[in-house]
Length: 341
Image (cartoon, rainbow, N blue to C red; front, side):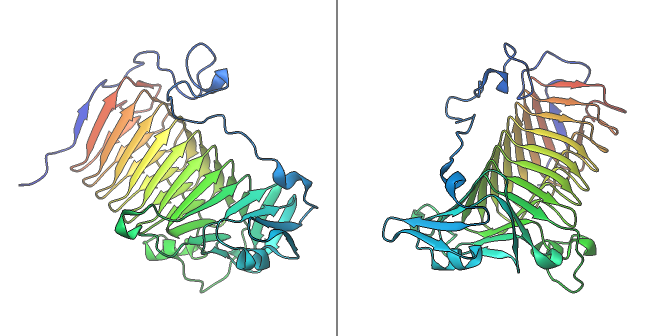
């Protein structure tokens, strides 16, 4: 039987009830009180790890139980030599890589204050490709952690560079790859800043998964976060803004969950789900997007709980095709055109 047409449950627009979100002031719920008031298990605010602050500027130190501390002249050499489970400490300053930093074993990359990674040639800066990422035999997938590191993709064109995102059908200008690409295994990014003047911020594909905590995705020529295939992404207390495409997009049969996030100033919809993707947003603030605040198309499913969706240029919540949109306890206001359609 054919799937049912697009359905909407919950408030149908207007100012709606007063809703507490991550942007609410103290006393109204949200992050103003210095902790996450919406989840007993959410560790926000995320404690900062300052172990890398003592490393010399642009220095690299590998810490492991088997070898103790080892100093390296380059980050690429340190990553190649580091054993599984090691912590790689990156000193402050901008480290320019000759190419993408390929991470193929479970490690923790920990940055000092103002530690930034860039790559020559305009390609991807960080690529996570952990063997055994499918978690065969029911075991948890190997995990790569990046903490407190800025990842910046410069606007340097390099013709003829193929990329994962280009194979996913993106325009040719994305041929350099997204700044951070997760294609196998699990990546955990905490308190990271990701910018891309050439392409997008973070791309999670295939059967990979990612947890994005307290991260800032901004100034991106395309998506802030793009999820495809059967990938799984959890975002909590993240800020996504100023993107050339949707702020967060889920496609294929991927799943994405946003908790206490802010999404604003995207050139398309703030949160967009298409094909058979599933998206769930709770306690989020989505506003001032060039299209709808939250949009679903194809046969995707979107659930929105206790979110503020406002000041969208082409509506607040939009369900197209045979998609399913469920709205609960949300405030939808000041949107051009319909609040919910």
